[in-house]
Length: 317
Image (tube, rainbow, N blue to C red; front, side, top):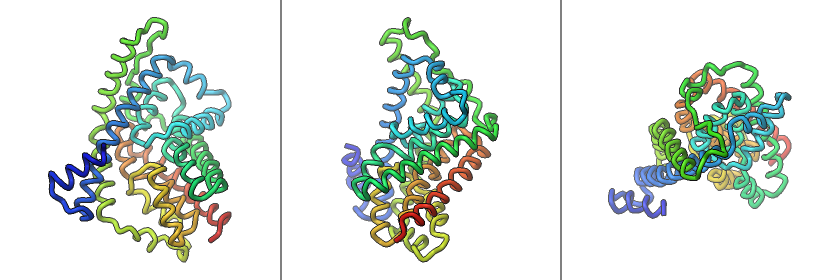
């Protein structure tokens, strides 16, 4: 359906020639705008319904265990089974903060959710086998857990936008709530979150559409090939402007691998696209202050680069 609407707008209504750079950029923008906003609204609605059954205290208790690392590991594992892109993870990020979950634990989820999920793991298994899929799972969880632990120790709670702490998702007693109450609460929560994030989402998709239409397909191979000792950080840097989810980048990873790029380099690129993309940072700016975004990028980028070099050492060409 989304593709049909994008075809109609780009090729029929606006008259772009299929395959043209501007046409491809517009097609990408229309397609992803429809997909992301519908997905975002659906996820927010479902999350709100679920939250009406589970008081914030219950979630806080699970993810705020006395052993500091336990909450980070639990949040990273939760991210594996919640295949959200960065923009759709924002309502859960806000909900975790509301529930009193430590910021570092929340970041472990925010890193893990777009980077490692069951869809990506199944696709990796199908294309590269169980060894690659399991190593990617393990390294993704390590990046999310360590990244969250480091951010948690920095004491940067004051760098979260004030409205995140002020937002209240309805701390209601489960026994007194009817289904009508739950549906009304969910509709209101959808409207509240979308009103705050829609400009950031459109800007992010616009950047992704421009890159999709105008950046040559062999650009990354030319600058991050196997002969470049700095291929991994170059791949991470080139992945930052892009916008996609883990499942969407795997076909690109397969193509780059076929052209001779090292496995660690392409997977570092994949992790950078999903965890550190510029459109994601623009979206996250709605809930995080610039200094915290910079800290987040520095920590995660360092971890991803380390993972990339480790993969290249473990799985040589």
